[in-house]
Image 1 (cartoon, rainbow, N blue to C red):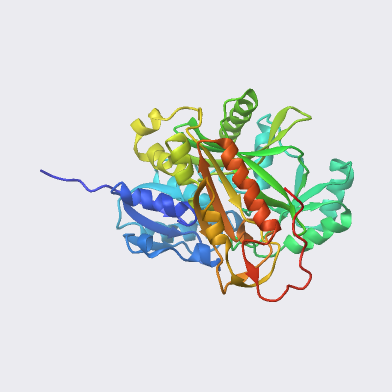
Image 2 (tube, helix red, strand yellow):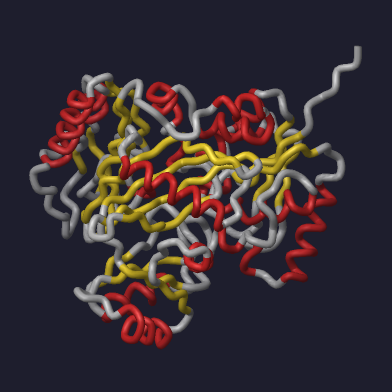
Length: 455
């Protein structure tokens, strides 16, 4: 009897939820090839990975050069040829993007290998937020008003002659980033100029140099996340979330909660159907996607904020919650959509009634300094709906003020059969923040922000 080994699966930049994708690949009996998208300097969370993944990979390859969308075509060809040569010793069955930095390379490489792919031709619009918006606008969908600029004069011209915001509220952010990194809500041209000077040419949290700055209309409404998986153009919505964001520590969009939604109302269905049209416009015909969509009550219609052609990020901490609340998760469904058509077909097209209620509460720090004590560890774990917590700080570590997902000190996950019990615990966490019952800091930080108002 001849046993044929399963082929290798390449995961490009297996960090954040990409680590869970890599582990799922290994659990299914596939060989794992780790491919790093660039030799450019990257933050530790992208440059390093846990030993349980690194040691079980049959190969670890570095794609030489910079991000594909930022280099000339002839350089791309040379870099790709080198990567293809390194893969010759392996039988490759699929290429998956592990995180945002791996999306473009995964598209190009899968195309060159003749594997299941979204294709290289439309890869820029699946990564560059300006190209993304223009692509869905050209498809006849509601898209944010915007311009991508490398010069200040271009921004002035767009705001004064095209956008003309009343009241003056303008979003300024990098064209390629994630996690709320350097997203500014500007209320004057002076603030826009300061944001542009801060962003343009700087290295973002993904280790990429900001080659252009995106200036957009400010969308007013409630922001939702629609997580999907797709196989040969057939889309499945595998989860829907509602963001609760607000100002804190002089940052405009700090996350306060991310709630799993029972997506059965007409409004939710409208948002999901719009999202699937966005996927079609961007030619996302295979694999996962994570779309952020603003529901605008004055238009009674959705508008895309941005979409990533990869799994929901946030470290993959959402996986146990959606498993309990829905019975399946995006990571497992991602591997299914490439390698298990029967399992993919068994997924419902849209999520139904929740089996339980789940929520992430990112803790918000209003303090800076070295942590002296951390009573919040026990206080959080004693909550009635507590499921798990992922602390990035502890006694002796340095606490910073929270301004985005990269600076939250802890991610608390709540799960309960009763939505009321869960929401009561959300309020308890906010009270612990307000009363500084989560940690104590040595000394007093200069210019410390006041605690938040009552929740």
